[in-house]
Image (tube, rainbow over all chains, first blue to last red; front, side, top):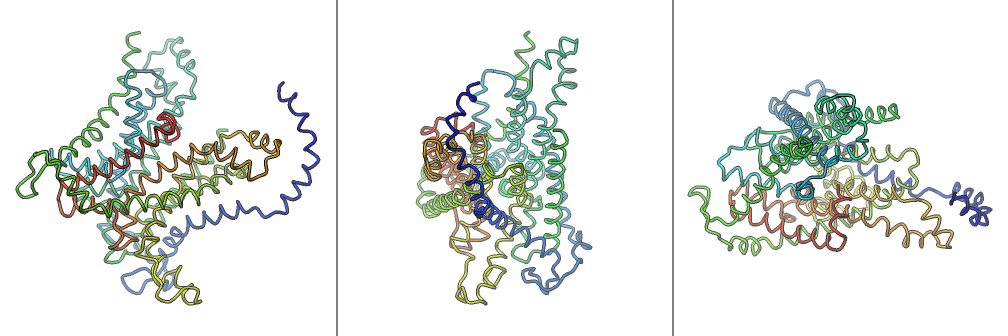
Length: 281
Length: 284
């Protein structure tokens, strides 16, 4: 109604419309070029890494282009320590995804649905856990493990990863919970469903996309983490730690291979996510 | 009815317990460790040695200042590079907005360490970037980018750029385009409309982005060790070395607290200027 009243005064401006559009068509879209230039910059090291996974280096250092080979893909698992590091990384990330997924979902559900005493404090602690520098988180955990006489290793790494991922999951889930209609749950209860049945059959299916998104985020954060992991992993080596360890003696091309493959998995997941989102709409 | 009152606490409890045990308590543990004296062999004794902090600051003030400076440079660089990108995607991205955002995030599927090491190779003295420039003669033969402050700052800006783009994009995307049209109707030029309308609306996003880039960049040590060589070490390098190599825990934890304190002062003055709610809201 009000917009109808407001549109006529804009009328005098419209004759310029087509002319302006024509000028815009002729003008170079600098923003587009700029955005693509920034994207090129972002992808430069990735392209370099992927290209050199096909390189056939002469010595130990895979830095200058010597020739094309598929050798490293055929021998991707030639380094037992690298395989072990990769296995550690993936299994730690899966465990982190599972535990922080459950804890974060419950937390996000409570934050999005209920008002309770200590809600502000909970938000504050989550905010602090997300924005605290990784060195601080790692150092604090290591200090405490040292004082309690806990030997650092695989499980301390899992504990640390869950700690910094749980807030991210909670935020993702909370954003979804806020958009849900509580009447749907009330309807289920009216139809005789108990709280657990309601949760299982109504709430959880509606939350599922957010839970998945949060879980994948936790997986990605965990598998990529270097700084916190160096503090709490003891003698256990993860993929980023192993790469770090080999920088001085020369990184084997297998690292490029695994990096490229991980990147492709990420691309596939992201594309699948978009396709699924499109279909749902 | 009683049941309903317990529910939120039951839901929150596991995550709370985890965060309390492995985040809140450890910060306290670190505080206690920072006041001890001793060494790994004889053990550490609680002596409330505030002197540790004096030692830490007087020994490492250079690295502290350098970290804040590098962090600030990288943050400014992120705004300069990221703002136009966020602006263009939000206003001109059309149906491809989410695709562009995905493209911004895709490189981050490759491990942080691996990307940084990739830069080391790219920036090396006769590498892919400098090699051709040198052979053409655009850059003098002795020119080196690696192991310098600009290399570290570039690496930091590279690694944390999305943390600046995303929050700015989020506020610009929510902005009502009619506000810009109204500005034009009131005879504002493109520049005026940007400065008077778009920029003020986007400031909360910029502030959130600053928080999300300055904190991790100023406390990072991966870029400094991979790209900075031995003369550009940051406070993160000191913390890491003191904890994991020298095992000098009292000094290591004091210096961590100094870093945390400096960042907290920054965040609080920020929150005071903007309102706590707003900072946390955009950040989340």
